[in-house]
Image (cartoon, rainbow, N blue to C red):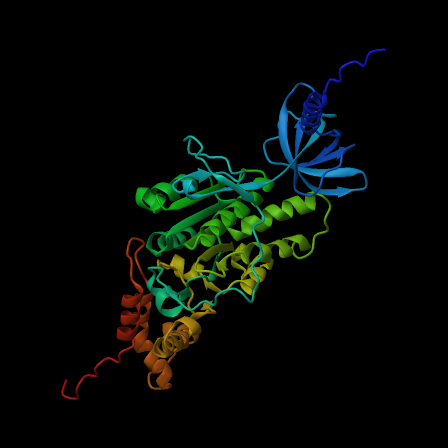
Length: 456
């Protein structure tokens, strides 16, 4: 039998094998769907599927309606999900499909001048710009690698510049009850502070304030260097929680690129309340005033992401803290005061008397002021506070006429200085006072008055 010619088909088999491998790679992964078994409040319970904490899921109604949710807990074979959108119309036995993704934050210079919601979607009606995507959690900075705070920051408010000096990279809290002027003071510092980028997080506050903040406080010039993240009070708690994390992550990106960033968050209390809603809904036991332990774990994890980094960038952060019932020992106010680098307390008594900004100098402090101010500046600030405090301690006696002049030289001095000190602390909302002018004014206001000659 004659030998048949050998045909080399190796290249054909290699090509076919490559096609099969490509088909295997492109084959969609197997997704195990679950079923919605229970809805209590805002908490969804699903059975039959597995997903990690923070994973996104798609809840699909039998009629085709779709809802987004995120895994916030699990127990046994059940997953606890929290919706990130309105769940009106959700039906029993809906399909729960894990999508595998986790929350990510849009970052980049293209965000400047834009307004986003807590999910990273743009609210201003303009086309989405080309952005980069980064993990929402950010990165942890080695505490030994952080640059110390050594540079004073001019915030344009005389009382803060002179008596509560702020350093670049510091985290400060504005503590007050409702209606005392936290947002107004925050707006003043937004306009007057020297920063390359401003990131504003409006978390859990009134929806009308978003437009007012953009148009009246930032304006076109301020908005050109700002990014606004808005998650108003009517948003689901998960979106409010993500809004604070998103604002911080955007600020981190600009800081990592070497820029000086001003982060303003109004308010830290609403962030804590959003976490309380989620934690209580999934069964975490309440602790102090209904706040579960996870709230006090999340606060420092959010705040510690601000500050100086290992390079040349910085995040100077101002957080408003709502003291419920003007109680400065409120659990969130107390926890925030312990982890921040200083606090500015606003007084309702001063606000009701028409004293703006209503800063309570006695109750306020800046923990980094000794490192960023001169010895002379510190001496003047201490003398101002001593005279002011002396008057406040004897205010009732002086007002009812029970104090006799000459009884105490310190009180006599305080009575003489007090009108000037009070005027020094007051400032119009449209008035900017530089750091240099604030120090000069502090020096001037503490100069002794020339005494009248005996012949007069």
